[in-house]
Image 1 (tube, one colour):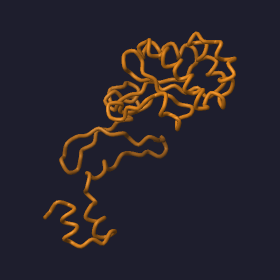
Image 2 (tube, rainbow, N blue to C red; image 1 turned 45 degrees about the horizontal axis):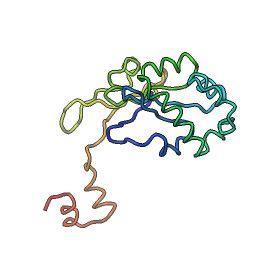
Image 3 (cartoon, rainbow, N blue to C red; image 1 turned 90 degrees about the vertical axis):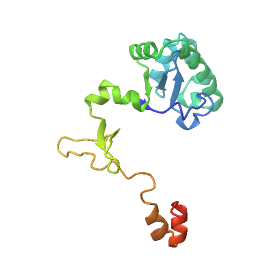
Amino acid sequence: MFINNFTTNRFDVVENQSAFKMLFIYEASDHHHIALSCSSQGTWENLARTLGRAELIDDSRFLTNADRIKPENRIALNQVISAWVSDRPAEEVLSIFETHGVTAGPVLSFDEIAKDEHYIARESIMTVQEPITGKNAQMPNVPFRMSESPSNLRFPGLPVGAGNEVVFKEILNYDDDKCDSLMGKE
């Protein structure tokens, strides 16, 4: 499963994913998003057959992963995949991909992750008390936990701006007046 906040970080799936070369995100008909990874030849061939487009396996633009990630070929392939995915709800797409050996998963918001049975069972989300307000807040737990070396989340972090005075005075060597001005203490 992948985390992203598509309400504030929306991007064009076809044009702006060049950094991901092997991982792409598609929108299903129910507006949920699916991350798809297809860098191995076997997974690519499974995907092409699953899409009902087995002829793409022998298309010179898509013969190898190196061919598939060329910008012009990636755009053409993403258009084919996007059209197929956008005709189905996410749950159906994921079920079909799982059945046919295509590597994919849902893109979840933090709210969805906090309610997901797998994340809950793995204690991936912790409820901690925020030290300044005393309010409970949910945040990601330590991602790697081992039975012989237990770890835990000891501190949720400082509120925004808590270190400003130290940075302004001790690192940037600002005088009290400039520091107070920047921190709104005039």
